[in-house]
Structures are given as structure tokens and as C-alpha cells.
Image 1 (cartoon, rainbow, N blue to C red):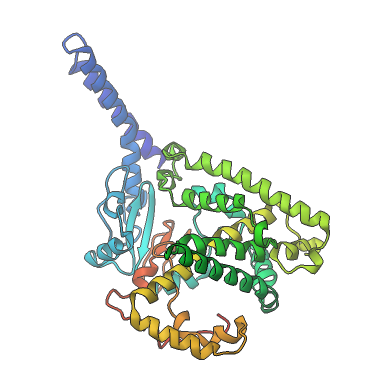
Image 2 (image 1 turned 90 degrees about the vertical axis):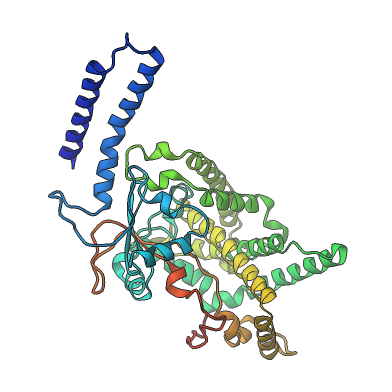
Length: 441
């Protein structure tokens, strides 16, 4: 690869020197024209090698020019790869259409900038990728790296550290005992949200449901993760979460050129510096809470995740920086997931009266007139539980290997499209009715 790159650069430079010395004379042309042509040729001489190498790498060719594997895909453009073909709104539907047009539902090759990837749009292939131990690791975006998510559960590499994090999250927050202990927080948050909805309806007859759900979700996660209730979940925490959402959702061209030396220069919107500033605020905010809890010494009597992590034995204890990363990720991701889930369910029942009627009957039958607890009703709300929202694109992994059904080149990370693999475009609302749901969620 280095030899090929040097050869192409030398040919480009020789062509540039010959062209400028024999074809164009500075005395025969206007100075501005000569300068413009010289700059253009210089840029071409520098970018051409990267364009050729990027295209060859994306096509999965070996050094001898033979194909490593046959995967259908899109035509690739120099430097930008397949980005023009997949950019725009409704990207999940665009990928489905492209896979169908190229006969590549199982695997379709793309090049996003300088990053070769393979896209999966078939349930069987997705099952192989998502259930295989070789595909556990996920490729972090620049924002995820800067916001410390690589030290938390979502993006930490598979290994002993990752298993420790999963165990801590499961035992410290998601175990049956912890869920039962935190039930009071969830009820208080729900009661507060209902009161705010009633107040807004009485004052104006309208409800800003998105804002209310985000606030309720923040209060729930702050109580479950940090042990903060009511006004203790400060506005500063909400601002940091909202800013983090904006940064993670900002298009960063550098994410598609992270394998190149000039990848950092492609961060045209300053996502990296903004994430670093936010990470500094997060460390200060969460570090203060951790230190206050440690000084108070009452974490043995509390049921939130922070208190559990402070009670871990010495051999299992994490560094404070890792504790902060785990707590921050749990709050950050939990607020978004819960708010979107509830808003999506409300929008769905509002738009489809048949779903609303069926869900209403199910809730009445499950709840009745008796006092309710989470464990009493969740297992009985089967219709509501079979319609969870999900990501439309983001199941990506760091590596792909050949499987029984698909030949794959080593190297390009696979993306599994949840939209085409789980949602037939002509499906009905109750299409998951035959799925056997687990009783514990």
C-alpha cells in the first residue's frame, strides 16, 4: 500500500511539473490565471492518491488486484465514496431501496467517506452478526469518544472491564430487588408528571408533552442512578444532557475519515472541541456528587446505582473517572430512551383509534380498581410491550467475518438495519402478536 501510494504521488508530481513548465508560461498568461491553475493542480496532486487508495480499499481488493470477496454495492466517488447516494432524509428507507435495487439485502458494500462498511438488511444475516461473539465491539463516533462513552457500557471493548460494567449495572440498578426498591421514585415521578399535565390543561388547554416527558425522564434517571429526587435534579444536569444530544446528533464529517491522518480536519462544525468542553463540565458535576456521597457515608443505606458502586469490594472497585463515565452514560441514554418510548406510544395511540381502544381495555383489565405496583401489571400489558420503538440505523459493529450465508472481507464494519430487518413496509399494527414475550421485560 505504501509503495502504491508513493508511486501515484510521484506520477502526479511529475505530471504537474511537466504541465507547468512546458504548457503554461507565466509571461503568456495573466498572473491570476497561472496562480489558479497552479493551486488547482497542486490540490489534485495531493488528493488524487488518497482518492485512488480509498476507492481500492473500499472495494475490498488485495494488493495483487484480486477481489477479497464479492459483495454488491454502490458506485463510489473519489474522496466522498457513497455518501452522496445515502445522504438526505429518511436514510433508513433509502438504504432499503438501494439494497433491493442492487440485490444486496444480505450484505451491501458502501464507502462512507474513507470508511468502508457493509450494510445488512436481512433478518437471518442480522441474527448472525448481532449474536456472534466476534461482533460485540461497536465503533464509537468522535462525540462518543470525547464524552467518555468508551469507558462505559455502550462502547467499552469486550473484555474483563466490559463484563464488570455489565455486572455492576445489572446488580446495581436492574436486578429485581433494585427495581422493587426504586419503585417509589418511579411512582412519584409519574404522579408529578400527571399533575403538571392537569395544570397545563387547566391553564391553556394545551400540553407541551415533549418537555414534560423529558423532565419526568430526567427526574427518574437522576433518582435511580444518582439518588437525587425532586429539585435536586438540577437544571444544570438537564442542560448537559440536552447539549450532549445535540452534539451526538450533529453531522460530523470527521467520523467518516477517522482512519486518515487528515480526519480531524474534517470536523468542520467543531464537534470535538464542544464535546471536550461538555466532558469537563460533566466530570466536575458528577465528581462533586460522588465526593459528597462518599463524605456523607450513607451509601450503604441507599438503593441508587452510585451508592451500589461505592459499596463494591476493593478488588471490584472502579476508578472515579470510570464511575463518572458509567453514571453519565446511564443518565444520558436513559433520559432519551424513556422519553422517546412514552412519547412514541402516546403518538401511536392518538393516531390509531383501534390501538387506543385495545390498549385502554388491556390497561383496565390489568389495573382494575386495586392499588398497583410495577410487577403486578407489566407482565399483563402484552399489547403495549410488543410495540417498542427502536433505532432505525445504528446497530454497527467493528468487524465482520464470513458466515455460512454471506462471504465477507475482513475489515469493514457491518451495520445492521433494524428498520428493514424488523419492520416490513406493508405490516400491520399487530404483526408481532405471535412473538412470545419474556415475563421479566
